[in-house]
Length: 194
Image (cartoon, rainbow, N blue to C red; front, side):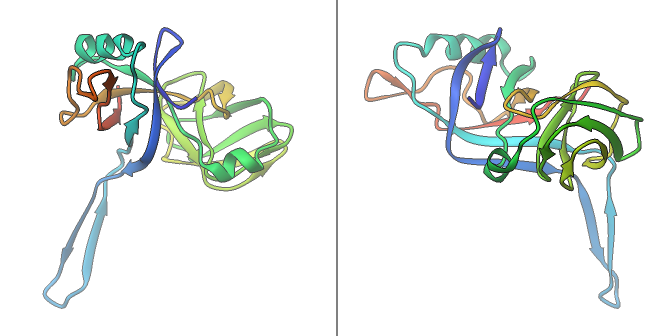
């Protein structure tokens, strides 16, 4: 299940509407001849904006996580995979190797890892996305360019956990509707970059 986790237990499930956004800063300006100058920064982070399934008798876990972590401590989020990825993926396990700064990594796998799959290396916490199908072992390009080396297991299923911070617009506390349903409305989670 996709949502917010603590100690391996699901605290709150994501609900529609949900947005997974790539924040890759770009600066653009127009010249006097109306040409466009574009500069793209090297940094990138994933951001999730989603509703949560309203909670009743199990709301206390999320309430504790929100209030104790606040805006300054990281929480664990299970990254939602694209539906097309889930339907088309045939790969069960994968191992990857690659160097920092090189967008092409080497993958040892049986089956298909579809393009658009969120992946995570066992060697560091940054989340990446494949940009092309990888059917069987070989090279695959990932986005963004890796900030650290890939080595060991590659998480490719519903096991891609991202370390996040709550955005400053998220209510740190609880919000109830109908007296017994904790409904936080829309929350925003930002990938934590070391």
